[in-house]
Length: 170
Length: 228
Image (cartoon, rainbow over all chains, first blue to last red):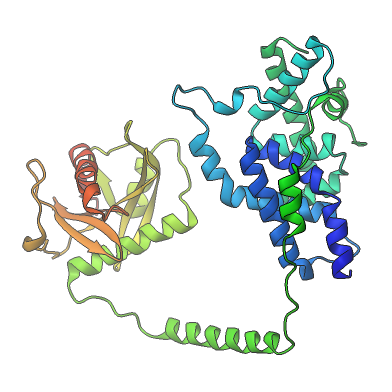
């Protein structure tokens, strides 16, 4: 793939990667850094990308690996604020549609519940359900068999339902 | 997702529909657009790198085949062997065990224990395993402190080992020797017929008090003896 084509196609996934980064890092400034680092690596190692394979999965894989390598430790350190309350549990400002209050609360609960899931559950739901990736691509991003992806989706949803029930939404 | 699990109550669809999506802010978009693409690699780089890698590999193999230089001092040699075991545990991890398999450990290591330190609120037990160090069978117990330091406690038959007097440090009523090796600190002492070593990456001066405390926790709660 020519360099210009590669860049153009990679940039087409910017918003999806940014969304994924926000849910992984639970922190927009970290998501900014993570996305920039992802593109830096992707452009630097573009010769390793095999044309004909899925660029989207390749980029998501780079982003997740970068997150696991550099950001997870920091995330663990910052997981508890001084009062012992996880700071990512505080609702954030976001681009939720500006509709009625009930729907807004439901969005917030869904988002909060997602943020409370362990990384592997969050990732599998974001890739499979939110991004609509085929299971084979999700498996490639996560470096595990398709069967594992299926079981993670199942368990992630179970956990998500429990959390939503805690918040009083279904 | 097309391959939905049976029993899915629409949660997947709800996520796709209702979960707020974040779009990349303009400054991120600008930064990504300005990210340089990798410069094309000159044609001579690949063969040069291959040659350098081959030379390095031959050098490493050659060095590996040389006989290792072991310190002449038995105390230093023992500590060096325990540090190697400790770094192996750091690098490859320790298999976590819920309880301490004392009978198995005694059978495999030749070291018995009247009492053994199984961890506390400060120093959690991670795992135990038989080891073969400095030509002796023994046991290694690994602990992790609340700050994440791995602490390795090794017991081996003492033989004729002498604890170097000039390195002894008074801790409570005990006087183990403090030996530094390769950036690690180690306590070495004899107890009954066994030699005991505790190693951790706590070589900074401000970590000494904590390292003394770990020594005391293990020393007071452990009574090993040669079972053979």
